[in-house]
Figure (cartoon, rainbow, N blue to C red):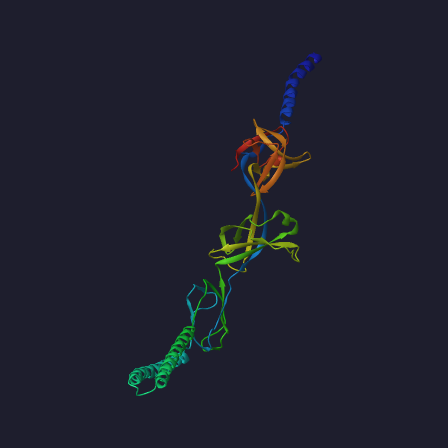
Length: 358
């Protein structure tokens, strides 16, 4: 009887133990890793060298006084933008007005003498014909008439010179640009050649781009260079290398020069970012940086197929704008893991949450 009871108890216990063993086996399977995916794309990647330099203004004239006079009015001040031909200052021209009146009076006097001498010459010619005076006397009168004509021309030239100097009492801007410095004020007396303003032109600027000496062999005039400056953050100016200075500076860098022409908002002295384009990869296969994972075998990506991740050893190239070029080991169009790729292993099950933005 006791043996029968023990046999029945054993039969009842065995199914429960088998169920627990089955549950343990199922719980030992690894859980699926949550990942996002994207497809490997092809795009053009540029090979470039980049640096930060400075801008130099090539047009920075000093506006000086061409005549000696007192400053009456100032129309431009430091920081103000000016146009070519714009009036900057007025100097006192009273002396030139008086000199012009004096010269004009001299012209009137000579003209009167010349008119009278003309009549004398005409009368003398009649007297010579009647033998009342000698030919020498008539020639003396003609000579005096010629001398008065020359005096009249000299007086008129003096008036023109006075008018020219008087026009210099109005000071105009020689360029389109900005007033860097206002040197004089109303009431100041300036001599000929004294500085009045310092202007900075913006029509033509020069970018100085320092590149390490090891990069110099890759650069040459004519290569495309893209420039940007903080003063105009949304503008990229494309130009070419104008020249490369042959002397390496004390900072062990070569000076690469590129010109900027007629760009509004660009300023001399500002910093400039320069990117020299050395070449391009026209059909580069790229994936996000997060898709490339470092493993003992090297750099790998995980290709997603049928809810499983398969490790693929790859070789990488350029890295730009959050993308990595894959030179070997992956083809365009293949689906790779992005977020969560660092937690994957070969043949690991995955749960794709969403497709990552291209």
